[in-house]
Picture 1 (tube, rainbow, N blue to C red):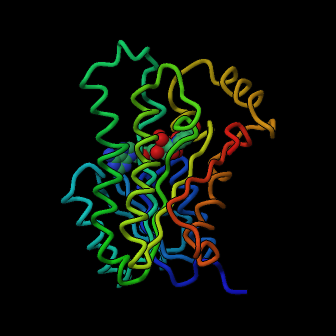
Picture 2 (cartoon, rainbow, N blue to C red; picture 1 turned 45 degrees about the horizontal axis):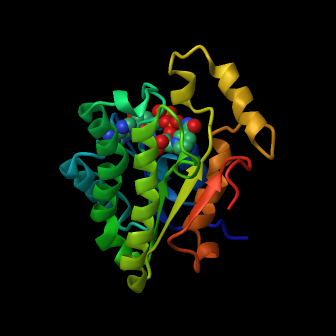
Length: 249
Ligand SMILES: NC(=O)c1ccc[n+]([C@@H]2O[C@H](COP(=O)([O-])OP(=O)(O)OC[C@H]3O[C@@H](n4cnc5c(N)ncnc54)[C@H](O)[C@@H]3O)[C@@H](O)[C@H]2O)c1
């Protein structure tokens, strides 16, 4: 049987670690060629050299984003998909909304919303040619709220509404745009955040789920592969919550 993404070329942002790296590995396993973008060009050791390209890109810098797309086209000659995964989460200090200053608000918004917008803009011409697809990584907090993370929750809610809107704009060109909203996921960022309450957070997450287990980055991969594949050809503008069954739509 042909792999779900065989022959497709996909850019993944924030692919140096965590959920983004797991997604890149999953796309490769599904047959795609993958451009792994991150603030520093990701290590490619252990990945198939003929189907991977690592690029340094800050998603908030339009020139770097354009350069990443150009590097993809030079190497692979086409582009079929984008996963907007780069985002700020694990390093954000939890504070009541009255204590979130304008600078911190904008820092989170810049990466989590403007970064998504700039990357979608940069890939749109190529995706029109390939009739490709975009997956934006939101968060389950967009639907349930998260005390202490007003700026983060607002940014991820924006990803959902942005997804719906550009799905409507790009649909006539055969380009699909969907979102995946993970719940609490034990990513590299979470493991490296230096907080000493990981076990308590894991326990709280488990207790809130239909499926009482920890969620790892690999748990997010299948939904992204599916939404980028032709199996999802009639699905656009949607957000798929991947959280073990906390938010139930
Ligand atoms: N871990 C969770 O519980 C969870 C839950 C829901 C949603 N998410 C979302 O999933 C995505 C990945 O989360 P994670 O926990 O794997 O994060 P992580 O911190 O482990 O990795 C994030 C990666 O994004 C990169 N990055 C940050 N800013 C960037 C920028 N401006 N340009 C390019 N790359 C940049 C980082 O260098 C890093 O490699 C984020 O969008 C996050 O909001 C995470």
